[in-house]
Image (cartoon, rainbow, N blue to C red):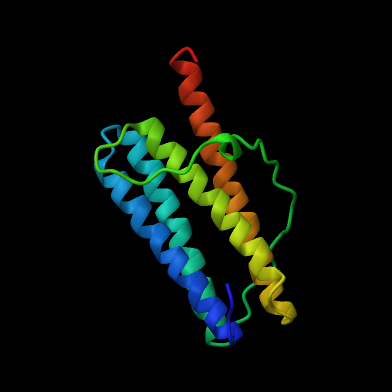
Length: 153
């Protein structure tokens, strides 16, 4: 990734957030289990908030005031899974695996983007987004583990 300006960096991140919204909305709309639909809908809403935060930053809005940074544990479940493509009608477990990998990559993206900018406020934005993606990754890995435990795995 090479960028000419911090605006290009932010636009790149906005596009990744839009892709995440689309993924969660589509996966949720096809999911046969009501509780899974709600989970994917909530993730789509979170990704929309990230998009809005980045768009606001481009407009000069302060984005991070009052945000509480904290350590989010990483159980690394997704780190041992292969990349996969979304397929309409894919099983719930595969949708969770794909979502975990997407969040893993989003977390890595925001950690990388922090190193590409020297604007302290933008660094805080990327740290905050990295933390949010880490929360999503943990939540999805937990959903996956809980589901698999119920299946006897």
